[in-house]
Structure formats: C-alpha cells, structure tokens
Length: 294
Ligand code: UTP
Image (cartoon, rainbow, N blue to C red; front, side):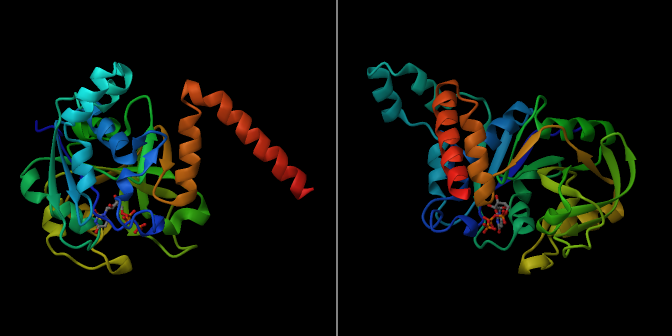
C-alpha cells in the first residue's frame, strides 16, 4: 500500500487581510508568540509522519526559505554566549526535507496545489494550510492519514462552524456518516449566507489521491475569480469516494485578524513564564473596560 509521505504547504497567497504587515513579509511568517505560523504547520506534518514537504511560495516569500535553512553564524554566536536553550529552538534538527516551488501568480489555492504536481507524482499526498493551527492529542493530519489508510480514498478535514460563518468556508453536504467519517454528496465553496447544506466546514487539512491533479489541470475559475481546490474535490468525488472527516482537536483560525490575536493570547497562556503576568494584564484591561462600559 502506498502511504502518505509527501505534503504540500501552499504559502503563495497575498495575505491581504493582514496588510500592511504583509506588504514585504509573508503572512506565514507572522509569529504566534515566538514561532512563525508556518513552523507550527511544518511541525504538525513531521509529527504526522511526513518525510518530504514542498512549500509553494511566491513573490516576497524568501524569508520562509531562510527560516527553515541552517543559520551557522547565529548558531555559533548563541553557542559562544552559552544561550543553549535558544540555540535548541533555532536548530533545524528534524530529518524532513523541505523543498520549494514558486507559484508565479496567486491564481488561487487549487492552482497552488497544482504547481507541486511533478514533485508529488503518482502518490497519495497531504495538503496543509497555514490559516489553521490545530492542537490535538493525535495531530489532525495524522488522523486523516489514518482514515486514508483504512479507506484508500481522499479525506478532507472538517469541523463544525456556526451558521453565521459557513459563507467563509468550503462546506460539505454529507450523505451518510460513520462515527466521525462522512460520505459526501457535494462540496460547495463559500455558499451564500443561509444556503449552506450543513455546518461542516473544510479546515485546511487534506489527504488526496493523485487523481485530483486531473481536475486541477482544468484550471477552472471558481468563486472569487480564483482556481478553487474545492471545485476539483467536487469533481474528484464523481469518480472516486471522497470522505470528510471531523477531526478531533482545537482549531485556531490564524488567517484573519481577530482569530490571530485570540490565538496569540491562548498560546501565550500556555507558556509558563508568560501566563501569570499576561493574566494580570488581561484582568486589568477587563476591569478598566467594564468601568468604562458602566
Ligand atoms: P487564503 O485566501 O487564506 O490566503 O488562502 P491569502 O490569499 O494569502 O489571504 P487573504 O485572503 O489575501 O488575506 C489559503 C492558503 O492558500 C495559499 C495562501 O498562502 C494560504 O496559505 N494560497 C492562496 C496560495 O498559495 N496561492 C494562491 O493563489 C492563493
């Protein structure tokens, strides 16, 4: 059986929701506390058993490559100053290989995935998006790979969102469920408010059979004038079973400002040295604000 050893991380988008911060800096390099968001994603891929990662980059994304490269001068400096704990954080010690390919124009997520087709070849593969960070006992991608290994079919990670949020996501129309696994009759990209067939939203974790490339090849323009991955998934579902899997874990939406700030606070509270001072600071703010509200 071919198992899933390769992953694509698309990171060539314009990051318009974070402008002007993302004018000269990739949004994937924005840090949550002290780590760029893309590092959380790479770490999840490694913990899920991925051995080769290809990051799809674009204009102005050089710092992503530098981040995952060795930094001999910095390492030497930290060693000389005996800052060993920090040195450990800077060292790239895993066995995973990270490769890069450029998407010449940001034509959409479907196009970004298609750009990595030659790297993937005829194997099942994973896609992880940096907009969602997931904390889970079993990494969310690992959960999907486990499902792939049982079904030998493409598996799309989903979680439930509120009625007022469905228009922001790809939504699945489930036909049957078996525990957390759903058979799907339709995948719809960003349905208009009030028209979503369910509240199960696609969450930036996917395992695909290589047949998805046949449909990405068509380069059909979809919602927002972009080549949408969801449209290709919908077509793949007509020739093969594509499952949705409601993965376990807490998902953080770091692709938009409020979610990014909330995630930063929650992750900072998980750092022992930051927790108490941050809680004090937050309770002072809440007290002052509630005085004003009164
Ligand atoms: P998003 O739509 O969330 O990212 O795409 P974006 O386009 O950078 O953000 P906004 O909407 O302008 O604020 C989801 C993922 O797909 C990648 C993005 O980098 C992001 O990780 N993507 C999107 C590409 O790689 N290429 C594209 O053409 C579009």
